Image (cartoon, rainbow, N blue to C red):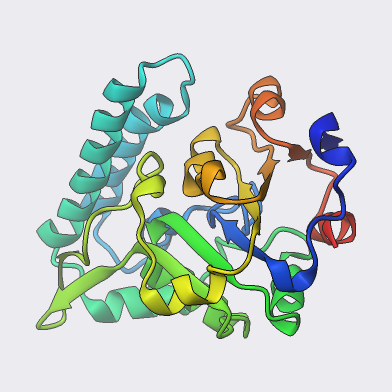
Length: 260
């Protein structure tokens, strides 16, 4: 675990009644080898091969753009919006049903927690620490994953792309599309805002530099940012942007002991 000198003197962070956690989901709460929530259908036997092929073509074209730190931000933003919209259009094109989503959600073997992540979530619940998950993934699968692992607690709020259905068939996404570069635009409902408004410290968890946009540091007394290295990320870039960087050997138990 690589710890920036800025935060060494303030760890552990604020008291349990004064902190909340904002986290990305795919490859942050799930491990770095897990498929993303966008991949659940493609890794099932429930959808046509043509959907899988078209979905892969989109991934092969847009994913390198998403992770390339040298591409101009405005161009990257445009292309990622385009990617997400086109993938959602595939759900509509192939008339993916609500039943298929629900069947796929019962078989989430392609996703698994990072070591001790579930225990970390349980710790937050036991200590009444709000956990806000802001994900560019598919909220239907994220919520199902938490439910199936018996840890979708009442202190958790998921803000993600929720696929909506009409007459049992996918027709689009509820509200605006959330992608990796507009997480700063996510607005929380009043009941969640009320739970965190008097908490001055934030712990942010992510696996990409763009996840730092989930929290505006100017609005909080203290923000500690934690990044998880994956095969797609540059160690140098992560260390220069996050206060703490977790490497492959690190786990959520180490992190909990460090923070609390």
